[in-house]
Image (cartoon, rainbow, N blue to C red):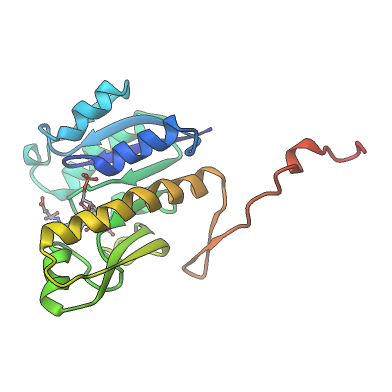
Length: 215
Ligand code: NHR
Ligand code: GAR
């Protein structure tokens, strides 16, 4: 079973969706740790209540991004793991950090990338008057919010929407697609080819029952 470390900064509802999916048998992973850059993140308590190891590495205690990222990597690498999942993690990561986890670092971003990289995506979508908005799970690369797309979900922007109503509609989709993307990783079905993510077909249900040479 693959092991994952989840990085959060706040509420942690995407983390909770993964815990729920794991508990329901829909996400075959060990969640070995939840780490926050904010000591007061509500998600740390949720994770601890679920019996998961929690840590924080407070970015305010470091002179710069390199020093923070080094301490964060040390904390992460203290746990044996296969994948690092950014779930509402709010610090931009240095190139060195990202390279260290290349191909095993995922993020969920609250827009249909490449539209609206960066912060305040719902406000900007409303300002631009787009009719379709959404969320994207991608592998993280050094260029912010530009890594290969794994899966996206779209929602309509409705008349009268506010930042909050739009965020809530999209969050419902985040909770659906992020556990799905992590499940594909856990099943070894994601491959990078020429900078694009390929999803391998689901193995046939009975393939594990047939051993080569035994008929
Ligand atoms: N790091 C790299 N190198 N590449 C990515 O694609 C990353 C990343 C770090 C985080 C998540 C991202 C998002 O989904 C993410 C993707 C934070 C900021 C930001 O501006 C922007 C995008 C994302 C996360 N953070 C401010 C900073 O100075 C702090 C903001 C705050 O603390 O509230 O780091 O949107
Ligand atoms: C989510 O909408 C996530 O996509 C977004 O923050 C929210 C976190 O919610 N991420 C970013 O904006 C990253 N910069 P959660 O803590 O309840 O999962």
